[in-house]
Length: 64
Image (cartoon, rainbow, N blue to C red; front, side):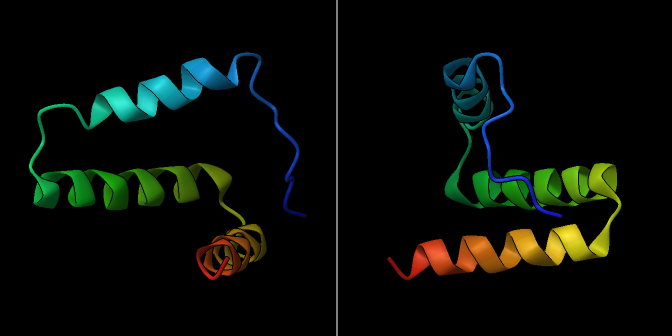
């Protein structure tokens, strides 16, 4: 089951870490970094149903 509750002790620090990882990257490199992060984190999850649920939620958010 996909957990949509915040589980970060410091969500702002998590956000800053992700944003900082993109510093000084070209748009293409930034996009590639995002794709690699998605694959690495999906592998950590290791549950296709959870990954599919996350994709569904993310796509729904793009429509709003």
